[in-house]
Image (cartoon, one colour):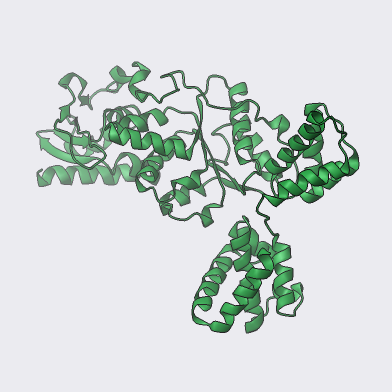
Length: 475
C-alpha cells in the first residue's frame, strides 16, 4: 500500500464525511480499506459484493466528486471484494470486479448495469420455513388490535403501535421498543402492529422473529461461513419485529450483526419494532452503541392493568367464548389476579372448563377454588406501594416521610431499601420505581441498589435490616 494511495483516500473520506450522516459514514465508509493507486485508478477493498452494490447505487456521485477533486477528470475507482469469514481469517480468494464493471467516474450512468438485477442477489439467505423472496411474516393473525384492549396501563404503547402500523418507517417512533413484565401483552402488541401493516401495505415485507431464533440463525450462518448472506437477507426486510431483544445480552457476535442490520434498516426508512422485559436503561451486557440506538425512537412501557382494564379483559374473553358470568365473579377474578393478563385469561379458561366438564354452574365458590389453585402456584409479585408501606412501618415512619427530599441518614437508607426491594421483587423499570418512590430518576434507583449491596456486605446492622425486610416481603 503506497502512502499516496492512503493520502488520496483520506482526503476523499474527509470530503465524504462532511456530506453524509455520521451513521452512514460509519456503516458504509469506515470498513473500506485502500489497496493501491495506479495512475488515476484508486483501488479500494470492500467486505462483500452487496457492500459494493450499495456504494454504487447510493454514493457513486459523492465518490465521483471526491475522486475528481483528488485525481482529476480521468479518475477511476476499482473495487476489490475480499470476503471475511466470521472467525476473522480471510478466505483464500480475492475477487476483483471485472473491468467492464469498474466504476468509470466519467459517466453519470456508471451504476446502471447493477440496477434492476435479479433481487435474489440481495436475498440469498434461505431461512428454514421461510421461502426465498416470498418471506412469510411469521405473524399470528389472532393477535390483533381488536382484541388488544386499551387501558391506562397500555394507552401510550397501543397508540404508538397504531401510528407505526399506519405509517411504518414514517414516524419518529423508529425503533418502537415495547417493554414490560411477563404476560402484559408485549408479543400480542408487536404481532398486532405487523398484522395491521400487512393488511394496509400488502406489498411490504414484514418479518416477526424472536431474539432467540435470530441468535440461532446467526450461529448457523457462522458455522456455514455465510454471515454476509445472513446480513443481506435481513437488510431486505421492510418491517422487522424482534421479540425479547434483551436475550441478546452477553452475545457479542449477535449484537454486532444486529447493529449492522439495524443501521441499514433505519437509514433506509425501514421500521424496526422491538420488545423487551426491561427498559433500555435496565438492560445488562448490551453494547452501548446498540442501547443508544434503542433510544432513538420511542420506548413505551406496558404496565400492570388497572382494575377497570382487568374487568374489560375478562368480559371481552367471556364474550368471545359465548359465556355469561355473574358480575360478582367477574369482580372477584379482577380483584385477585392483578399482575398478569395471561394468568387472568388462564384462570377464566380453567373456570369455564371446570364448569363445562363437571356440569357445574359457575359460582363464587368455584371461582375461589380456581383462583386459589392458580395463585398458589404462581409467584406473587408485591407492589411498590406495598414495599414502601412495609419499609416505612419497619423504620416507624410514614410513607410521605420515606418519599420526602430530606437527606437525614436513616430516612435516606429507608428510601434506598425500598428502591432495592422494588427492583428485586417487581418487574418495574428503574424509571418507574424512581417515579413512584419520591419522583426520583433511574440513576438514583441504580445508586440506591448499589449502596444497599455495599452496606449489606460491610455493615452488620444494615445487613439485619435487609434480612428482616426480606422475610416480611417474601412471606
